[in-house]
Length: 447
Image (tube, rainbow, N blue to C red; front, side):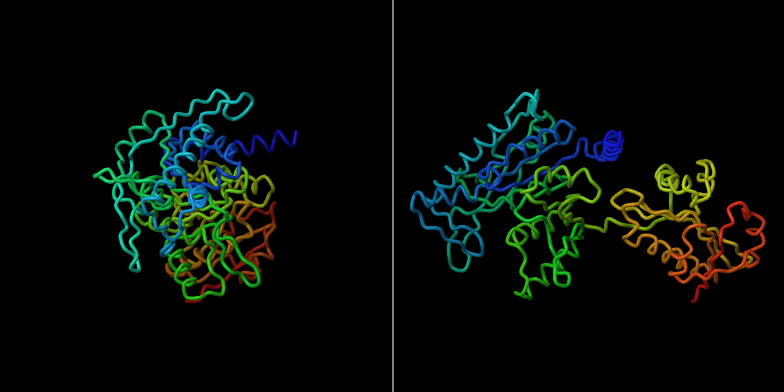
């Protein structure tokens, strides 16, 4: 029974993501290591699941290890300038051979329809084409990179046409010039430029590390969320020190995801390729599993709107049932919605509180404070109280009071002092519920 209840709760929790993602474009990029280590089958199952939910996928694959292996087999020189491969005519032949082999393997796996698997009865149609026009990078540090190129233009119309037909475009790390030349491109360059051109909702890189780590004392902390501004600051700080350099994958991908978010991509994600189901956990759980980069902060404090009532009810009903909060009807919330302030995190209401003014006494009541269980240890209540205190102070109020039956110590820790009922404004005294016998706490607001 517990298992059934947990399943139902989980299934309901992912429903908003399913609705929100349907019809959206996700560009997912993965290196050749994903294919060579034999774990691509599980990833294919996840691609199939995303496609079945109406998500429009564009896949970009790399082939670095396969190219290295091909070059070594052909006894070709391997040279890099500023992290970019020098691709002469002989090396280009190895690149084409390696990329072609990887692509065929990927297409074969995407074509699976195994019984009793997520691919059963699936019909994924993979397409390819000359979607990317490239140009040579040219000379770096006095060395001509020859057939190493970069994205010049993306054939957006062609890709969108394939997506409209329900196909999954698969892009390889090659580009073509108007004169018929072929250029060796990087996975990250193609993925970012395609995501920007398509105005994709998400750009996702599968990499060796779980995400972006920041030093925290003697350990490292996974940065689950980061704005473009924070990402640029992190890169700048890491470039100034060699004590704790960024992981190689982060150095490759972070500049590109920052550029993508700056130029219109909704979200960028850096997640581990080693965790089975990492893609699903990142997309369909609120906490995710890797690092998400956005242009603007995900968390905002704002005035509640009538559309927020359903979410507010979900927050306060468990506390009402436990006797922590006074029960409020939907009708009452509709009438008093302008009194409420909410904290919104990635389009989900995670905390709320109401402020009721008593102008004659220069006093405000703080009421209906509720925080989502997942965020109660993240300081959301404190953030909300600080915000409402500032709001009350700006409006000229000198005192803030609260009535509580269960959380007295929590308010004391935040500067509230217990007082008596006769210290409340007379209109509020007349509404006091003697059955609940709530304790009264007050805090003076200094200017």
